[in-house]
Image (tube, rainbow, N blue to C red):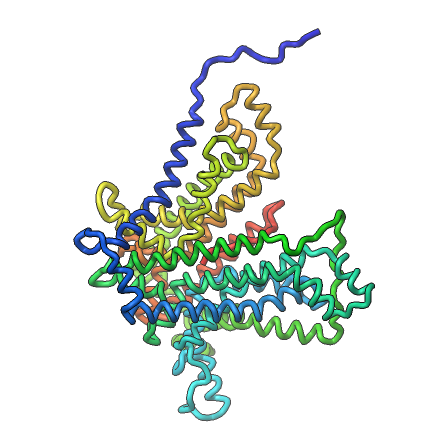
Length: 569
């Protein structure tokens, strides 16, 4: 007996292909257009004639050579410091019986989600040579008000220190995760064969974790090289530039967009090379773990040294977490930001000023939340569709879509800002001075991480249900919206929150693209720092941190989502 299971099929228009082509066009507009204008302007002069003089000036003019050398020194030093500090901490958390290991991981996350420019402002409060709280405390202890400062944050070593505070979490996360994945069988075998703890570490654990350490060093180098906020806050008052601050200065009056474009190209090329090197290192197969079921690692017993290890870990975390947060809280409730809060100078004036007297606050919050909501919504929709197409290989050009979706990760924020400025300050799309240009920037910056997260989620969902709906007449988009997307609700919500938080923190692209009517919270904080209103900055910074932590906690409370959140600085 044969049963007819199929219903008569009606001819219907399947809108899938036009929509898929539209998404490809969106990716090209987001990425290819600004990078094309950037390349064009880098090889033209003010009249539009082709020239290589812009690049010649970069390598001959000391005003460009010095920032380039400074950037290399800064990035190299930060990468070394991050590895020296973060790799041992990762080992202590992942492989020893040190107390409060979960707390240490949580505190590293706190430094992870702190915007580096806000950390730099906090260290201004702590270590400015004359007014810094730590220097005041030092002079009080030695009883000499006129003594030379113990710390001076307005130096290249001071900048290296601050940037290292907010880039070491990248190395820590990579190393700790790599050590978590190494099975304990190999170390147990080494111990059975007579290997002491340090011999086992040198011959087994370290070689297996070495690719993660090297990849972390490259990520730290990349982050230090492309940061704008911290160098702008600490380097400019000290009288020197990095490449990102130099690019920003070329947009001050009189603007020199051709030189800004040419100066952006080396950052772009270096970023691409570093990301490629990171991919090769993490994908190497020099050390591989072969086997079936893996045992949990046996924790190294530190004995009495575990408390020393905990003390050292907390000492490290004082620099990115405890001291900066304490300085911001002190400044928020003190009449003078450079004085320790007490019963005599405690005040709520800074809060009152921010919310009721500072006219830019309302507009900045409004712009930030509008951009955050729109960027998160649009970015998530784009990431969902592109992830679906590439994970299911639904169209012939899925590899090209995957490349375009991940390409923005190789574009530093300041470089993207320059490209968008050059793209949208002339017809037919004059978007400069509107929120649209910032929306494009934020979506582009967030897209790679959102795409990678959702593509990984798609790979965990079987295609059987989708195929069943297709057999019953559904289009690809209907299968995606009615079958797959609800199954990935957790990942979609987490991605939305991730993009929203990223918008609140973003400064590098926004500082190039904002106007007086499109200012966001991060730019408002930067402007207030230039005017020296540290009390108002502290209030805004605390609000930014509270929002960020609230969203991160909410993400990690979503059932099935516990992988943590990575932010681009």
